[in-house]
Image (cartoon, rainbow, N blue to C red; front, side, top):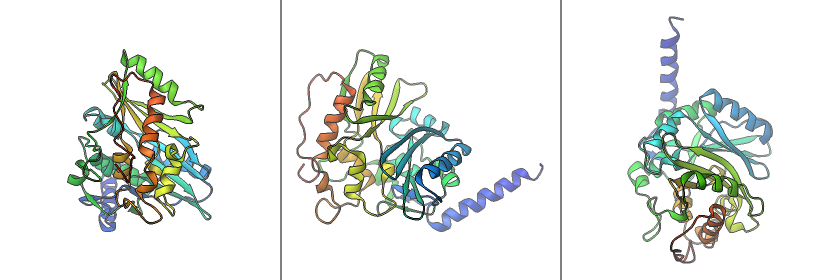
Length: 315
């Protein structure tokens, strides 16, 4: 027993040295981290991943299938919740998504980079302890999704001049009270007729703030989560950990992040036009998703804002 603590320190030091050597710990960040692949199909791999995450102190608050052969787990823990409670509109950063993508030989594992999320959502933390815990649970064999971006640039991220930033959310309307809003959004988000699914609901401790994860399964590819990812990302592992789409209730007011900010944040290297993958393919998606989220939330909007245009590609 007397040697347990020194041994843990030694193992932690070796672990962090390995991350430093691999380039995963640095002053610049990429959106997604690839974990260690798991043997077997996506169903068995999801259960293995769940066990590993729980063993590292995470709670799995969401689990859904955006498309065949893909499973997305959504997790939180005490550190993420504490940071969210100390951050303005911190609910967006209270959860992280883990994607499991079945291939011919195994299941590829990837997850949102906790530090990238912390800076992109302007949290009062850099999420380093969460990064370490995720890496212990799922492995960290590399990162992908974009060229590295500095924390400073992430905290002021804007894809192009005139487009939305984190400070330009989409107004989804107001309610008479927080409790009434919470009940309505949770109920309406899980609506097969709209083509949506309530993947998670997380209450931020000590605050009248809730974040909801909305799975989008509509027939319209502009408002279908898997279709959005597949339109801009090719080859496993894809950025399925971008899903699901968040809605934030803060007090009695509901909002969501503009796709022109959030999609660009997690796929920042995609060109505006040209090639097999570009934001031009998503030119109708921002308005389609805003319309869907307005239907999901059903809040009262005092003055409807005019659309900014045709979305990605024309603005």
